[in-house]
Image 1 (tube, rainbow, N blue to C red):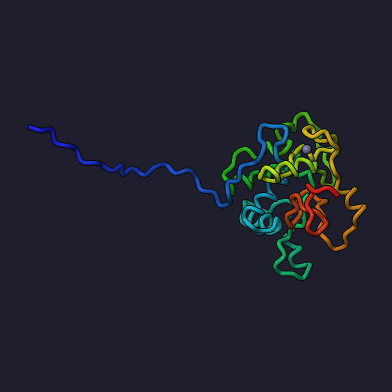
Image 2: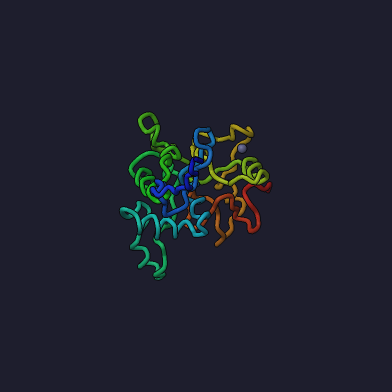
Length: 221
Ligand SMILES: [Zn+2]
């Protein structure tokens, strides 16, 4: 007597699905290296990935639909400027990459929205016990044009490393050249009414964007 062939069977148990994130679970760049991305850069890239402005991402999604209003978002300003659609976020300085309650709250909201768990390494929170939090950050953006050029040439994502936001660091450890500084560029070319990438986190995306129309921060002036 031949052995009967068993029928194929289906596994009916529901597989364990990972948690779904409301926003893209964008991976931060350079984690574990000296060129780890800064939190301000991560927020800019997250907004760009969703094709929305930083202001709308921060004001309407992270703050309005989060556990509570975020620091640096001012809902009351929506009524003061006469534009009812204003998101209430004007921008943030590099101190958002530091340590303290404000970065901690931003990270809590961002991790809840993206299901990431490592965003604190984009700030100085891992070093809060040993580093001072005052006068550690630049007021205006600084960047290495060669880094931007290299990433653009290689088809890599453009971003601002956390290192660039620190005032004591004045040159690129990779290319050995001094940073370009938004304050210097602005003093030579004061473009009235034209966006200038001087702030770490602006309401509209500023990653690698120049004040000169059609130019980017990786181009030689
Ligand atoms: Zn460089």
